[in-house]
Image 1 (cartoon, helix red, strand yellow):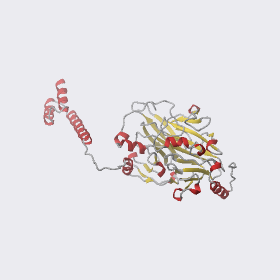
Image 2 (cartoon, rainbow, N blue to C red):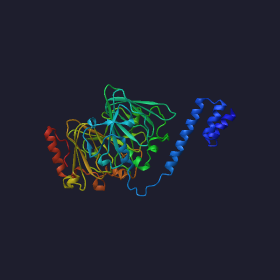
Image 3 (cartoon, rainbow, N blue to C red):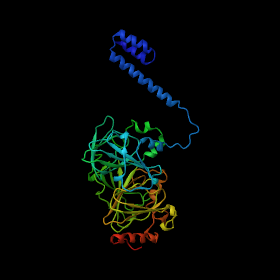
Image 4 (cartoon, rainbow, N blue to C red):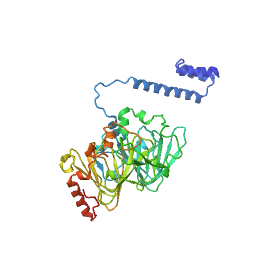
Length: 437
């Protein structure tokens, strides 16, 4: 036996030719199945070595200029890519078969102007009785369930599997690089939106195998804790903030978990700093660098105008209204016409203000309006200093322009703002509830 083992070892080390190995195997009584297995394994090893050598010695293209890995990856995905400033209704967005995620799955990528290469999204639709293929990757994501019901299975190599059941209104954030598989458990199609930081990650490493097939387990973020995706009262915390790094007086209320059963009904807390009738909560998901917040404003009210860095994707959870966006002046009516944008929104709408553009949200309906905004910065656990100024300018988005910040007080806003709003409310017979300036 030892002689045979030594001979196999010598073959694998290249000391014995393939022909000599086959002849010795036949004479020595090695079974046909064992011989085939050894030959097949050696062939795979040789192909891998050749492939590794090819990549290691790949000729450099010295004329390559501004090649964008993210854009190239989008092309090979084979599904629609939606751009522009907004998506009117994510629930009605056209999707097409998505080979990477398996049969019965359709999808579309969303790469809006204001994402500016920092954040992006995708819509995934799972047919009744179908599921996605298991996936893992090195970018973070926040998943909002648009319709249907189902279950996601989360696991790490060598660890147990955890099940998270979801429905319309749920938000799930799988920890970084865990395996995840999504199942439709309902009687109709299930559809969700996922917001990610994939553009940064794919551009940075420009190696898809590293991003999608990396074995590293981030146990500092997730190690199979039984309550990781629970939704008890212990997930809600009031966090004291440092006045030097946050303008949220009195601290912030934060939901810290990997899952929220229904963000449309999650309790919010008054936040007068952001506007009359405004309430909010911070969402810290799965120890991610990306975080989110939910904001709601009452009937007959609107928020203060503010600006910050790119990447804050606003997903409307309920209500209807509009948002004004502009750049180049504190006053909307004095901004260059090319930057004056009005986005009318309803439940299921998505938009993202571009870098440095002022934007102001108006509730034009007969019920409170609520949105969730996954982004960088805010008052989450982690602060990202760079990324287009996203982190720094998000802090200044809570500081008045009177103090050098990016928040316009009601008393300083363009008079046209309230005139436009009054006309909108008059159409629906809704009373304005804004304080006098």
